[in-house]
Amino acid sequence: MPLNGQELPANAGTTEPGGKIASTVQPAASGPQATGVDKDLSERMKKAAQNQAMQNKAEEDRISKLRADNCARAKLAQKSLNSGGRLSRINSQGVREVMDEAARIKEAKHIQSIVDSDCQ
Figure 1 (tube, rainbow, N blue to C red):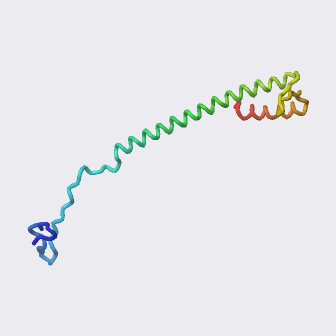
Figure 2: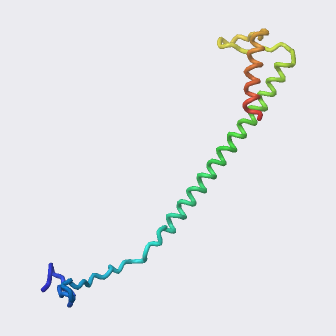
Figure 3: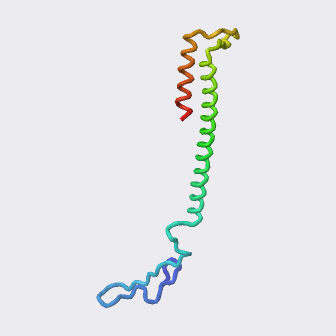
């Protein structure tokens, strides 16, 4: 007798000795069995990791170049300050003013902190 339009196997509903119902359930035939890791997914993850590593390396190189440039500029400014000559700068109103000893010391400390941080 069909159930929902499906044919039942010949031994469906029969009983085995001991009163148990015979089961004819078979595993469904599916496509290729998954091996646990999709090869395409692992390749994409590997490429993404490589791209991230390349980006990190490029960023480190860029920062390294900036530090080297800042170091060179700071050392040049330090030499100018230590030369003993008169130094002047342009203030916010556009007027040139000569640096007094207090401004020179303050600027020397600032430049020394840059040298300490960028020239390692």
